Image 1 (cartoon, rainbow, N blue to C red):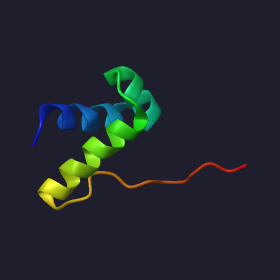
Image 2: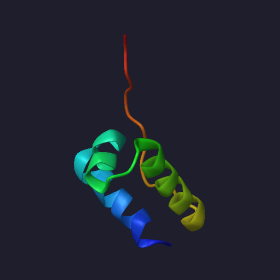
Image 3: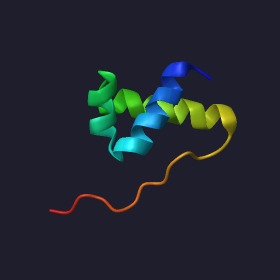
Length: 56
């Protein structure tokens, strides 16, 4: 477990957006996603669930 992974989870929880969390942490949205995915793999538990999606 890395502090950067925990910061990514906290930012995603607060901002509800990978893009906004990435901006806050000065990371790309895909990096935030990967950090959270790695943490999920380490603890064996999902930390977020995608709700909705883009339409259009």
